[in-house]
Image 1 (tube, rainbow, N blue to C red):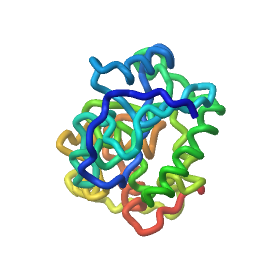
Image 2 (cartoon, rainbow, N blue to C red):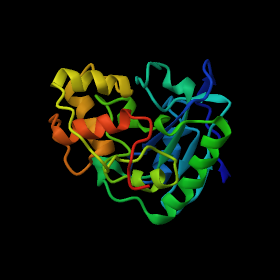
Image 3 (cartoon, helix red, strand yellow):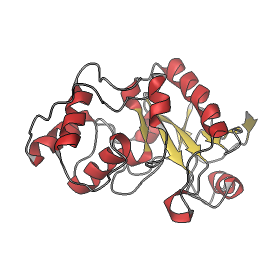
Length: 227
């Protein structure tokens, strides 16, 4: 791990209960690091994971990095104060979104595991930027291998077993989605964010039987997936 200090942080006001995963969405790692350490940019994260697996430490976990922006998860509005932010180098949807290299994921997994264990973070609070800011963000995106993390109990699995459509109305689905953790003030954006995380092969924003069944399973005590 390489120390690459960023001046962009302030004081936490909440204990750490979340991990937020991002992609950098920039042309390359050098550009991303420059921005995350530029005092004029006023953005940062605690860690950055390069495509070759190199991990950079930008902000001490005791401090509040500026990675989440305007966001919300499970009634927490100051996500920056409650989370550790990890930027994953990837050009993102604007510059040629592509799969995450194996070396990068192999480096990310132990980093997430270590943070999760030290702060006793639950799987349901290891989220993507799109989960906490559905109207603004798409990262880490539909190509991110959440299943790899879920198999190691580092994220919630996509439920695949004993799925039952509860036949909720759309309003009922949105109430359940809000209960799960999402900001549903924009129903379409919230639904797409949910699909991006748990049904990434079809991001149409339509509340269908599969979405309802997946969400119902996630609200049960032990979601049954391929872990």
